[in-house]
Amino acid sequence: MTTQHPRDPIGSASAGGAPPPSVDRSASDGESESGPGAAQDATSPHIPAPSRRAVFAGAAGAGAVLAVTAVTAGPRPPRLGPVGGDEELAAELRPYLGGHHRVSVVVIDGEQHRFAAFGADENTEFEIGSVTKTFTGALLMDAVERGEVTLDTTVTEILGERAHGSDAADVTLAELASQSSGLPRLPVRRLLASFPMIVLRKDSYLGTSAEDVIDAALGATLRDRGDYAYSNLGVALLGQLLAVRAEATWQELLGARLLDPLGMTSTRAPFHLADVGEDAPRGRTSSGLSAGAWTMHGYGPAGAIRSTAADMGRYLRSLQEGSNPGAAGLEPLVDRGEGRSVGVVWGLNQTDDGDTLVQHNGMTGGFSAFCGFNRDTGRGVALLTASARDLDDLGAAIIDGSVPL
Amino acid sequence: MTLILTAIFPLLLLATLVPSGFALLRHWTHPSRLTLEAFSAGFMLLVCGLVLPMSGWLALAWWAVLVLHLAGAGIATWRALTASAPHGPDLSARARAAAHPVGVRSLLGSGILWAVAALIALVGG
Image (tube, rainbow over all chains, first blue to last red; front, side, top):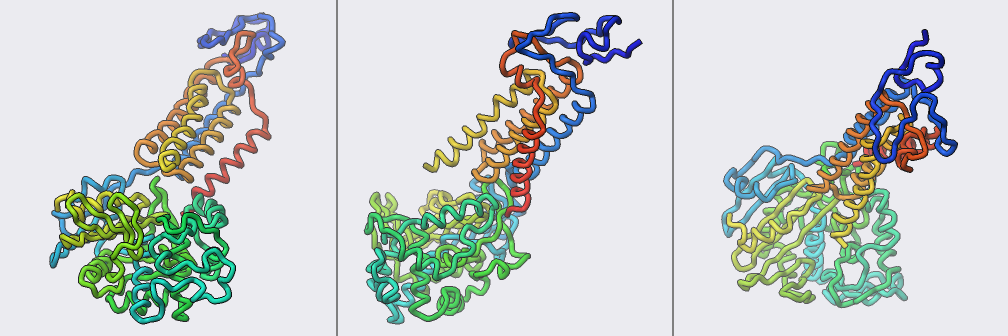
């Protein structure tokens, strides 16, 4: 007697034998089951039943694919690391830090200096992203003080014949610093080239040299010059122009004219990825996936600095005390309306109470930062997080007093 | 623009995967088609996770779609073990497609696409 299998096609193995055992024959959405001996419809040919092995193989394959997908790309909600520093400050900030795992915060209130962290300490390194632009702005004011340039110095005055014929030839350093030069945020070619790097979660600016930045700016078409329009290309060009004028690299200027005099010994801007170091902390994307380090190469003046909470506290203090050359660049150069303006890189916001907030944010593929202070109350804050999720609202709320600390 | 990129577009992409997940739950599915659906859903989920910011409730939606397909795979496997493939003139198009086996080239192509995306997710960062 032929062994009956519940899935044997009707009318084959059971020929001459007993009808097959009853099986689950739920009918829904038009499915129909033909009984023994039913005529085949020519438009819906009978499909041979898959073997048991094939079914398990399909299930195993599907399960493995979905499991690997979950492990490699599943969004991972992070948890805040262990508390360090001022526990009271950490407790006050914790409710605002959902979605972050490693955070460092330094709050300055006059002479008082408070530090708190989650999963970090005062010397843990973070990428500060576009807060770097404020350092480039400080280098500009330092160069002005030295007499190397003025705020009205043009691109042509630094680059000479190379800039002739370019839209950007008569753009001033002040326009570059105040995001009003009309240069695009990034050249289109850079935007297109960055997409694969974004997918790979690596530095979008890899492979760009200082010369590439200058060429891109000279080849760009200006739009709405005079109006505020954020431009990584503009500030990167500013940094490279200062380097050309000083006959040094932007990194050399940064170290010699800013970091060393301010005692920011834990702050750096490595150019090559190898210089970042294998042990350097890495950040995470907003989905919680690991992100590669950013050095930004030629665009370094726009976002390449790595710093610590301790050093950012020194940076803030130096701005408030006036020892930082960037302190001379805190007057409005461009009006953005609604109480907002831009000085030399720094954003300037007027609160309803009449306070002036000086602030700048930053973000890379795996980090986010906020740095700012209230010129009237003296409260300053530097927020550093190893996650590409911004803390801008918290930073602004701390310095305008909305978040009582 | 930010809302489109960070909420609307990711949500639409995830929503396109929901019908295939429900189809696995409702219709008898050939094992080869089950594997194909896993490759397709896996690829789209990888793309969403790699390219778009999946956090907060979007992350929940991502996992919900994945669990839907896992559950669908389980139900489809049980159904394939205990029931015969449906056939007949009254089959819906969806049911007919689900029951039909998939060619090797389709499986291979989908598998390669998924594997490339998974490799990028693994080596990235």
